[in-house]
Length: 246
Image (tube, rainbow, N blue to C red):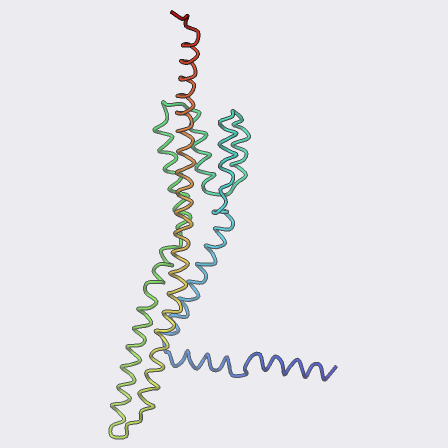
């Protein structure tokens, strides 16, 4: 038993270096306040990304399979079933489509008001999806600049130390100062690249949701127009068929 515990301790020690935490703290101290600021920004960016992923998952933004059954039941006359399908969805497309279906019952007299309400609800849903994206884009834009600022400050300190050394110039003073100064630039890029990638991906998801809203709402109104046109054509053809031949 004692031998197994000793072996486990040796394995853990080999997997996690003893001085890893001390080395990380030393790097943070060498980077100075700018590196601590970037650490805070990285935590904020990670929090925003996780929060948006949870929001998209809870709203099921990618799932639009309910649109076809809802529209099919609505145009078949089963309006209650169509609305029940939409009420069971958290997707923002379902909320906009539900408003469009309920408003289409009012007829052509209220069509403009219905479209205004649809625009209002769609705007609120899209604003909810876009919440948090502006701070994420800001982080992606300013993180490299903050890192570059830290590098410039570090280079200034390095050259000041080199000047203070006078005739006793040691190349390690300059090289060590440059190495420490470049830490902040690397940290800024490490934060900016994932933040920019996540921001662009989320914008694409929101754009696809917006297109799905527009498509579903358009099909609500165009289906009525085409149904009216086809009914008129069928009535006209039946009337021509009943006319006596000359």
